Image (cartoon, rainbow, N blue to C red; front, side, top):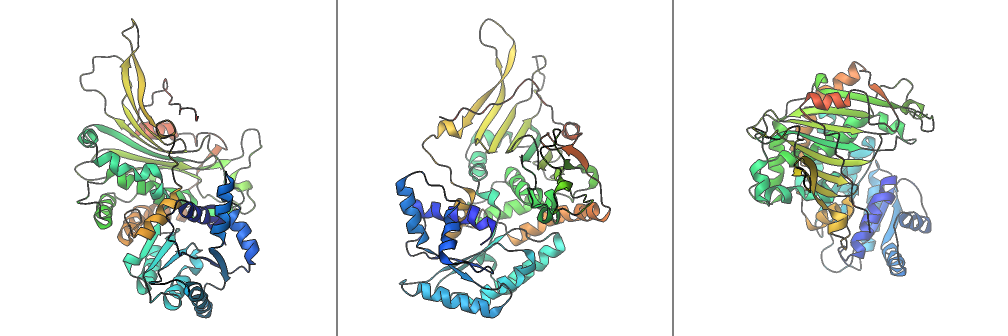
Length: 475
């Protein structure tokens, strides 16, 4: 009954239902502590589902007929036993095997008893069982291991799907195809041709009243340790032996194990204050944020992958709230042209725009058309809105839930992958919080704290101020 369920999970399930990917006899049961009458539950479920036609609205009615609700506690075995009885009554009319898929999006405080209650009391003996686990996966290495051990005590690893919705985004799922199905990419994807890599997440909004929750985790845990590091691992991984989930995840783990733990001198932290005009409040103006909090709302960090392919290439990850725009992108800047005969030319860049305006474009140097012999920066542009006008890009949750239904784990986080990620971040997080490191303040609606440009330039990035990519106008 939480925010995530109504904003993302139910609309994703409806998308699968609408497109014929939800198994015919599926029943969807919401479970939470809140007591909600079924009409009110249906109203909440449909509140975030977008409908454009009468046909869509009719489909919503059919979808809601599949949705029921049951209330109970998270730490009470009797509640899960009652849930099992309710689920069994819903399954009674279904012939054949009765598979169960559990989606657990819960606060860390009830994570362990809830996962145990599901396994002990609601586990199907008449079909397969799969458990989707939503982040946060702990706050550091030790707390993550506690959760992992609790899961492993009750569930098999092949039943667990740790979901990171960025792995379901269209452009992230396209990364492996882009890298390993194009011969020219394989030729230049290494330290000899790539100078630096930037992976950026920018959000225009602040915490918007959720600062109390955010303050427990901060921007590094919320975005960098999971979403951005997952993208880094796919950008940097070696070609897997096959497309089997374990082969793919083996290569991702290898990359993470080549990264040494972050140190404070390789990080820039920021926290937003009120906008210049005072219309947008600062982070500490949020009444739910503890007074005097030094939790960062912006972070930039450089990672070094110590292997043959990437030695010496900085991977710069940046993420922040209350910035000047909303976007997520991967920017790969190539090295300078050796023996260059043209003056003052910019470096080639490959940019993969994850959201919004999904695109892949390559910045390259061209001759100015006409009688001039001067050079100019242009682009080879694959903008999805222009090239694939008749294709609807699915929501990330829709894509990932379909993967779970198909039993494909390649886009989910394995336990040793989670361990490797936390080993990189835990010493830094303990130092930041133990020493109460003060972040650099920046105005709401700006590009971030002073020093961001100098930070990325320090690690080799050369900005081309004369060029700006413009997404094509939507038709």
